[in-house]
Length: 127
Image 1 (cartoon, one colour):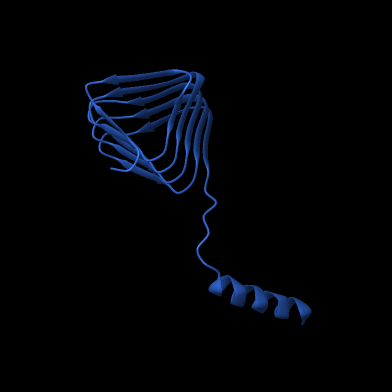
Image 2: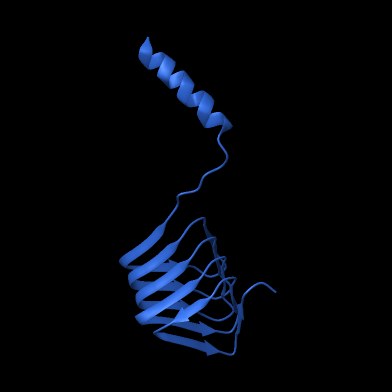
């Protein structure tokens, strides 16, 4: 009977709590590919600890949090677009490569690594 009361209280309080997000994306050595024309939304922070995140032509990645590139490569191919609502941190062994398209970072870009922009647009801060 006590377990039933606890379950009912949990459900009652769960229903009145505001929305909470705790999603985190972390790549630790894989090759992550967004196929041509795809869209990925991450409601939380994203990290590339090791490996390749490859965003193909006309694809879009939206990160509602911070993005950190510790090692290896985040590559935007022709006309791929990215949005980061927080900060973008590129550590010493990290690389962000952009070719056309746009990358919007609403916070600050901390660059200790390499940031290549070939003919695209990088927006920093709120417009």
